[in-house]
Image 1 (cartoon, rainbow, N blue to C red):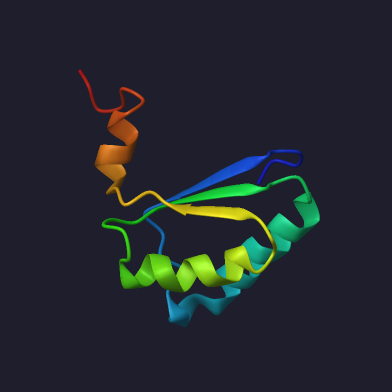
Image 2: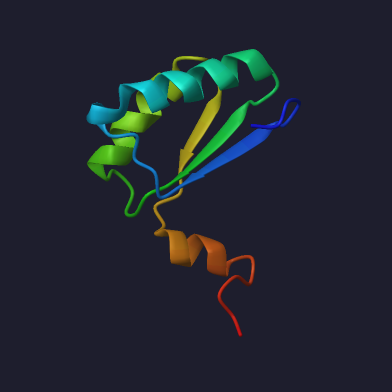
Length: 84
């Protein structure tokens, strides 16, 4: 993670319960940054259980957390990704 970044987008990684180390690392990096006040989660339809589970600890740090409700390919297509 880049220090000083104000936004983070998590695409396609649900931070499964079996990977507590990755979740701890992510939360530690966000805490160290101090300036990241917005996180977008790209995991599929709004309310997808993995997105809900990931959203809670991110919100506990008083930052804006947005469940985009999009799959990765749909999210990336907004930026022209995947177009030949």
